Image (cartoon, rainbow, N blue to C red; front, top):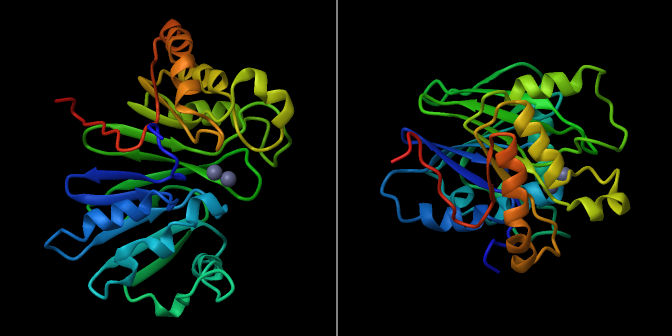
Length: 265
Ligand SMILES: [Zn+2]
Ligand SMILES: [Zn+2]
């Protein structure tokens, strides 16, 4: 109720450029806020993968239905047209009343294959790294003039079996190294994990360990388990904060409408 029950969506503003990380149900309220802006919406939406919780807000994102809006959607896929084709499926009549071809915004669909994605908005450079999660999934690193932000919402750091190379852990630590903020999967508590190993998610303690090893300044525990209560998050906060402080990392749980500013005011 307080930390929020929406599925993953993070709004980033870089000197006026709007970048949206994943299009979970949280993107609906972002769309409602954008309705009040005088200028046409121009946005880049970066999708880590096509799991339902990361795309299900898109049909409810008001700018998608505005002819003046210009939206670029980037996702891991082999070809640009696959990005559009996959997103269109959740708007087939059996799932949604408005068909994909009824979208009125000018949309551009781009596949991320490998290497940095140079977004054509304000020269922002985004890197993506494949992570350990069922289906093809990436995490993002965004270098802005003010801060380095890493977003890795779905990633099983330890356990499970995934198609990544033997050097993956080192690559991941380099990928998030020195980030001002790492928003990372922290779905499970350590005592829950044995039951859910292989589901594609991490424990908060595994995320703390990664943040410490990589010299991250602020770790945001993200992608709470659907049944997680405010009381449970509150109850574990001191313990996790202490564990993070021991490796020189500041920790917070992701919460609806939390705002981080860089440089800090
Ligand atoms: Zn997922
Ligand atoms: Zn997810």
